[in-house]
Image (cartoon, rainbow over all chains, first blue to last red; front, side, top):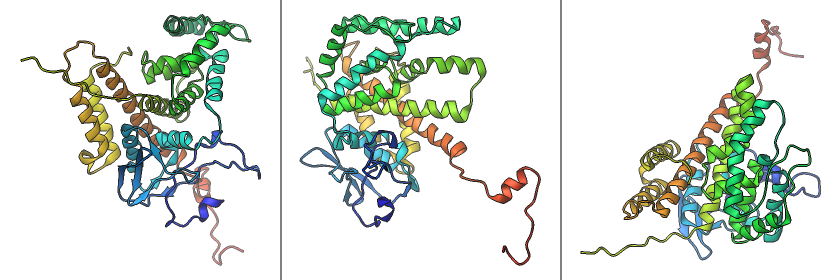
Length: 281
Length: 107
């Protein structure tokens, strides 16, 4: 394995994207798989501004992506958050907790080599199998819960984007009209490439385009979006009991990833300026 | 707009999470200073429903959720999934056995 042979004096590389999302190398092993836990080899983490954007410094060395590109982010707030991730590592570097770093690496390296159109297409495709559109007929308590919790979000999306979505109990799912898909395609096209990586990530985590847009548009909080995404699981937990090492574990991980994705999208698509109004004497 | 509660509560919880994450010198960390500066800058506004203020509050709440969930996830991982394999002595002890002593060593 190449990473275990790298000497500690080499320039530090941040870990590749999580094991689930990389192209498979020619020998069958994942070419973009994360290394095992590394010891923390740096004392100080700081930020500096370069030509391409903001960079992260581990001691005196500049952070690089897994594909050895210089790690630069367009937003200072994002750089600060990434630096905080690196600084909060204690004895060992736990790459699986560094979600913002992973997202930045994905945006910089683009290991799946998708362009903007392909990303948007992947995102909108999720609408055909959107969680909040797939309804059960029984047990009636769950069907009722889905109606009460999911209908408002679907209605909100339909009103906000002026589209028809609906829901379905059939195994084929809802019939999404082409005009609806086009509306979402053109809306997503207004985001830049980085933000789109984040949006597609959130959609993949929540398994729902509608919940993701609702989150990105700040209509619901991360906790609420995760709850709605896991509605059936929550129903079963309430019925049969909670298993901490499985349910809470998955819940925390989903919350962390979704929060990271949402924050990433917002930090990559904003340009914050403080407008000072003149004080009238 | 999402139901977020009081901004002060979010700010306090966020600063507490940053303290957990940073350790000793948390007050000098760039994140701590940035969060405080951002909240101070957006505090004074003549509008009742300031959009920038709400956006900042949402961002702060999202970041708080991220830090909190990562901490809880790590704690759960350490508790349930980080212990590794048990030694043969431990496994034997679980069913009430003891491994035999071999005075000359094994084999």
